[in-house]
Amino acid sequence: MADGRPTTDWSKFVAPLVLGLAALALWEGLVRAFKIPPYLLPGPILILQTLVTDWQTLMESWWITMSISLAALSVAVILGVALAVAFAASKWIERSFFPYAVVLQVTPIVAIAPLIIIWVNDVKLSLLICAWIVAFFPILSNTTVGLNSADRNLVDLFRLYRASGWQTLRYLKLPAAMPYFLAGLRISGGLSLIGAVVAEFVAGTGGSQSGLAYRILESGYQLRIPRMFAALALISASGILLFLALSLLSHLCLRRWHESALKQES
Amino acid sequence: MAAIVTCRNIAKRFANGTLALDDVSLDVVEHQFLSLLGPSGCGKSTLLRLIAGLSEPSAGKIDWQAGASGLSFVFQEPTLMPWATALDNVLLPLRLAHVPTAERQDRATVALAQVGLAGFEKSYPRELSGGMKMRVSIARALVTRPKVLLMDEPFAALDEITRFRLNNDLLELWQRESLTVVFVTHSVFESAFLSQRIAVMAARPGRVIEDIAVDAPYPRLPDYRTSLTYNEHCRRASAALERAMAHG
Ligand SMILES: Nc1ncnc2c1ncn2[C@@H]1O[C@H](COP(=O)(O)OP(=O)(O)O)[C@@H](O)[C@H]1O
Ligand SMILES: [Mg+2]
Image 1 (cartoon, each protein chain N blue to C red):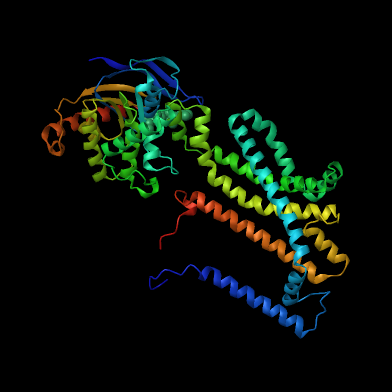
Image 2: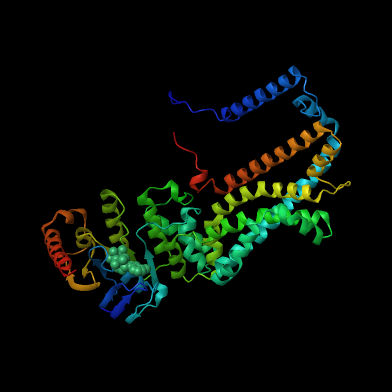
């Protein structure tokens, strides 16, 4: 600011909030003014009402989708980091496995989801595998780059002090990889949710154990469009929530040392 | 005066064919302050890395009287771990050597105090100035109580005032700890201020062409920098460097 006073932090949140509310008001106004029927486009108030009346069902589905995403993300973190460490330990492992990781990454999930759903008997497990496939690669590739990004001179220093492979990993390579891993994690968080939703669309199975994607399909068949929007809003909100949570985690891990987390001097 | 490291007829050819060193013989004498002076690219860093055992000579032999465990290395950059506090950076060599926690904390605290950084234990590298980071780096090198300290242009990136101060402090540490120092520099003035002996190197291929004794007494206080003796040693080192450049 010109007068040197620091910009208050909350203006960062207020500005987009005001814009969002204005857009919602405009939406509601247009829906009412042109008398658009709710099965074409419901207004935000109706969507909110649906969210409240269908809260029970929607929350059950929300939890199923979220638990699949989070489980997939966790498996992606464990396997991604483990494989990246194996890559760092052996060029041969890296050369042998990396091309297949790329294949996994470039194959559209909608194309392989039907196969996985056929092969795996359990629906939830098949959704988890699909979500994992999408979430896995950013963590693997980012962590691999991170593990190789340690300062050359520090690597020499560890050699000079006869550090074991484990010590070099623990005290040098893993901390150096941290910012890269966390950047990958933030991408994978959103991807795991997308993977879980897309796979459920493909699976298209109903029952009491279904997630938000099936609620959208079901509402479409039944022309309960406000409920469709309510489910959609929940998916977006979950994506935002995941992103914010992972950003916070990243900030907490890096704030004391990494450039990306430092407050800018003004 | 015993040689603590002996380099005999060593050569170093890199994988890409560069002959970085050819037929270098050099004794590092115990407790001596030795400078390696030469133009950029003459193989100073290569020689220092060979002495440290970080790379292998292509020919010739290097003997360590002390065993490589008594060696420490200071790089041109502070080379600190940005995610660790000053104290954690300094105690790293002890941690790698499985020294018990309490003891390594104590020794690292003492080492930081030795380089004038008492009270900065909990600071992260980004919170320290260039000179302070270099002090942390030196504390880390000293914490293992090495016999030989290898330094590769450690002060080249610092401003002159900071460099002079660190020069004085280094000489004090060298005397107090009776270290053996091999100090790489491309500065005639720095080598003549610090060392007892200057090995002048020429490039393409890298070799030692002259070995100059600087017999001014220690402690060398700041007024040594303006003395006639210092001036004379600078002149001799400078002339040798001229010849080294002509060789290259
Ligand atoms: N790893 C390497 N591979 C190939 N050539 C190298 C390598 N390291 C250094 N050199 C070459 O060896 C010569 C000496 O380098 P160096 O020892 O770094 O010189 P100085 O430290 O005196 O500036 C230079 O020509 C440099 O390009
Ligand atoms: Mg060099």
